[in-house]
Amino acid sequence: MRRMKTRMHEYERKFLEALSKYGKEKFEKVSEDAGLNPGAANYALAMLEEKGLIKIDSRQKEEVSLAEEGKEYLEKGLPERRVLDSIQGKEENIKNLMKKIPGNEFRIASIWLVRQGLAKIRSGKITLTEKGEEYKSKPTGQEKVLKLLSEGKRIPEELQRDYELLKGRGKIIEVKKAVERTVEITKEGKAALAEKPAEEEIAQLTGSMIVTGSWKGKQFKKYDINAPSPPEYGGRIHPTVRVMRQVRSIFTEMGFHEMKGPWVESAFWCFDSMFVPQDHPAREVQDTFYLDGKAKLPEPELVDRVKKVHENGYDTGSKGYGYEWDPELAMKRVLRTHTTATTFRYFGKGIEKPAKYFSIDRVFRNETVDKTHLAEFHQIEGFVLGDVDFRDLVGYLKTFYKKMGIEKIRLKPYYNPYTEPSTEIFAKHPKLGWIELGNSGQFRPESLAPYGITENVVAWGLGLERLVMLTYNKHNIRDVLGPTCDLQWIRAYSIGREE
Ligand code: PHE
Image (cartoon, rainbow, N blue to C red; front, side, top):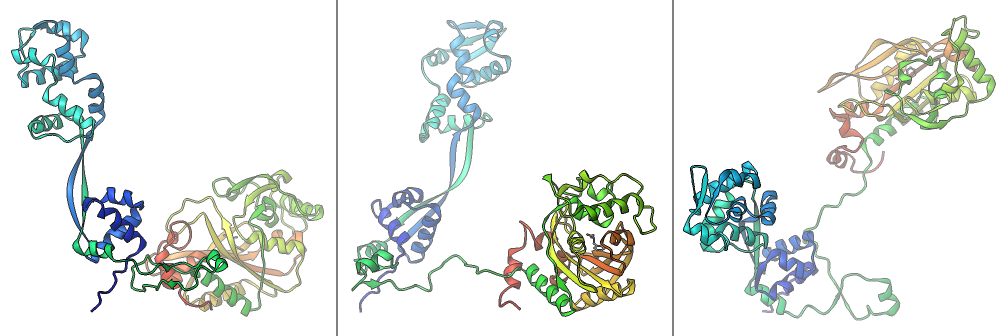
């Protein structure tokens, strides 16, 4: 029977060929010779071993090098050497020596001189032994070790004791544990290499092959569908986008139109247009991201009415805030903190009444990120203008959440400069308990007067990511959106077609 040809990936063949020159060699050396990067070489290693074409011998190895102090001593000499060199003749007064060599180094030096039998210390004097005199002109065992290590050489058997002693001296030597892998080509490996590689097979058909016709008569490489390969993930629809689409279809089914507005807003549209006082805390840099430059204000008549409503209530019967409205503050550029800015742009450009509008769009707040807060998230904004009141608002909110599968919501009185009454909306998260989903209310006359709106308007701004957390039972908003978002979850939940 004919032996099956051994299939080898290009990396495997390269590795095996490089190894065959040695028979047995360190993994790193073979990888380098084969011109393979660590990833490719490790792949080849695993595959070749599995096929029995190589044997791997892994060994725990100590990698020894000089630490900071070791390098310093290599240059300056070990402390005992410096003392040895400073002793003129056979004997020296310790006091004199300490003038040349700092106290702590002298102490180290004397310990080692005595331990190695090179000197004796008696009555304030250091005296060299015979051995000490001999070593004045030749290196000690530890010095030899230091030098060998600095050259990356092996420590011979007879210096092992000195090596251990030097290692015990603190920060001179650094020992790292590493795994050393030696690979050896097997009989089967040699046989596989000796096989004539199958007729040159074309793995990739290129443009030039087609142009020159060089592909003609050639064999094409077969796919090996059993070959291991890294997982490939196709594109997925982010669960947040799914929820967004669901929200969009709920509102459009209820007869709402979608509105769109810019991320970069003027403070005018973000705040002034809706009666947010110019000294409101939300305008502070802690909450709002300000941008350089100046925004344009809309037509002067509208700006004037907004100014008046802030200063004295305009025609609403309200007294306003009683300050002088500053157009400069309104011209500041911001990343919008809420999509209510878009609602007021729509009021500003004039809409057909009655009206029902919604938007699902991005907002920015200078917040500390935690499990329920992001600095960049999405709001589901909406308003109904016409014959509506607060009870309708509650109805819209309940209906919307019910359609999203959330049966129970709780409302809590709230304050907004532009709505009265206002209410916060909560729903129960299985892990986090009652979480805030957003807030809502009925626009105050002061916020509507500049646009000539005399009808009632109820409105809301709801967090999209929090809704995603409820829908998918996620308890950390950072898993939902942003740089730490949970890819496993996105892959698991978002297979399949768009609905
Ligand atoms: N703009 C409010 C917020 O971002 C939400 C809201 C919108 C409240 C419309 C009332 C009316 O918190």
